[in-house]
Amino acid sequence: MADFSPIRIDDPRDPRLDDFRNLNASDKKSGEQLIIAEGTLVVPRLLASPYPTRAVVGFPGKLRAIEESLSSSFSGDDAPFSVFEVSREVLKEVAGFDMHRGLVASADRLPESEELSVEALLDQLEATEGTEVTEVTECTEGASGVIAVLEGVGDHENIGSIFRNAAGLGVDAVLFGAATADPLYRRSVRVSMGHVLRLPWARFPGTTTTWQRDLQLLQSRGYEVVALTPSGNTTLREATEAARERGKKVAVMVGAEGPGLTEHAMRAADVRAVIPMARGTDSLNVATAAAIAFYEAVR
Amino acid sequence: MADFSPIRIDDPRDPRLDDFRNLNASDKKSGEQLIIAEGTLVVPRLLASPYPTRAVVGFPGKLRAIEESLSSSFSGDDAPFSVFEVSREVLKEVAGFDMHRGLVASADRLPESEELSVEALLDQLEATEGTEVTEVTECTEGASGVIAVLEGVGDHENIGSIFRNAAGLGVDAVLFGAATADPLYRRSVRVSMGHVLRLPWARFPGTTTTWQRDLQLLQSRGYEVVALTPSGNTTLREATEAARERGKKVAVMVGAEGPGLTEHAMRAADVRAVIPMARGTDSLNVATAAAIAFYEAVR
Image (cartoon, rainbow over all chains, first blue to last red; front, side, top):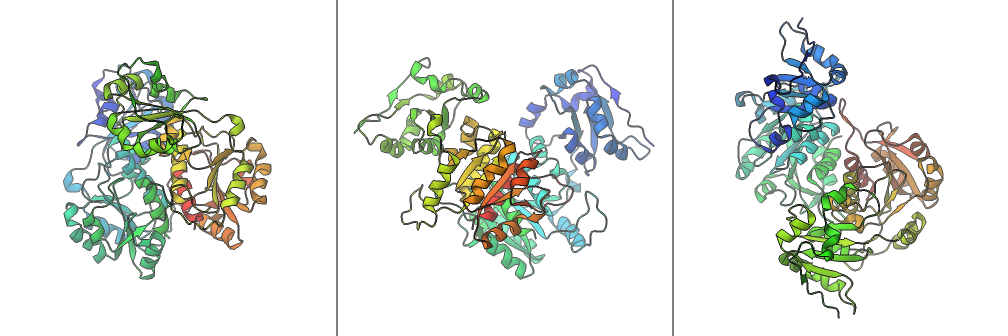
């Protein structure tokens, strides 16, 4: 069995720490960077994810705190990644700020060819539908029949919150339409508490103008697409109850804060539903509105 | 009628702009500072609030955008506050950062003797109960019979989000128990979108150990106190439906993220309710959990 004993590094210039340099600045760049997970809650979720971990760096006590996750990652013959032990000062010098969480890990993204397609994801979900849960582990659970569909949600913090809420409230998966921000961005990973690494997600290949076709795929698989919009003509409760009565699964569709869903998206949906709001107030934050819809749709 | 024509200021050192110096630093101080409102959405809410406005500062176009609110504030004979027109560069120099919103206002807090007591607030609400809404204005609306009670919510952003959600979903008021952060802090005002300035709130004078007595006041006024906790023995839906069936109003009680409600609070509540969560996930953010509870309780 491979050994995960940490290697001590005392020189902040050591190139083995390059994945973790100037983390705040890297958060501002966009594009295909590494996945960065922070803290004793999120790093184990990265280790258990399909993303290949490259390195784990932490204070001695923090590495001990995730010993169990590290052990199970090292259960094979080859060491799957490096584990480095550093002091608070060294980590601060490398990361560019005082990282009081004291634990950080890097991973590669999956090559595009290995990214889950929407169809493959729906196949996976169908395979778990109605499964009786016999063993209580962190990752097995029967599908709830509720998925989220995002359009134009460009804010990384909102993406992270939507994943946290979806995971917490039992949503099965998140599907992305056009102009939706990268869920594997460092801030999304952090705000989601690592759930972007656990909850299945996939991108529709189309644009906002192809919703009609994209949503037909969901409809053909038994989903009723409920578009959440202040201009809805039925309430969220009525819409989800009606879907359930017809034996349908529910796809909750939300759009960007401010502009909301495009006309294309709303026209392609089965029903436009509203969360009843008090007069003279503004719409809710998109992740909060989504949470209410998830709560209502999951039974 | 007083004239609100803005006075142009071109010198960033002008002492008439002192309320707005180094705003980010002032946000980090705690205590009894001025109330600061930012942007064309929130500043008019400050002008319409009971807090006495001291000054409004903005770019010419932004001042024009809130002309109507300014006019109605200046409808009496005396100018109630000053209005200053500045350039982007001057405001940046004063505030300490580039304030692209281009509009900011300051106000005094109310003296403690004028702060609403919990009893006075409940009296106000009772006076509006069952009111038929005849005129559609921003501020009149019949009471929903739902209030929020917070314990130990120490994060200003969470406080702001709770007010935004409470206002949006039609909650009548927010009551504060011990160890709850200042809702008039700049960041709370901003995140709440100004609703901390509109929605009635009051503090219980006691500590966490006096919940028994404090909640009895609510119970004697017809509220069922529903404590939101992962260790609840009934669901949120069952709890709120049961309260309604008994003709009760609902007080939704939430505690700090992480520790949650104290034993004192939970024991003093009428019922402990849970939001059903997926296995292997963490609790929701406190403002998100509160939003779901508000949604469920308000009918």
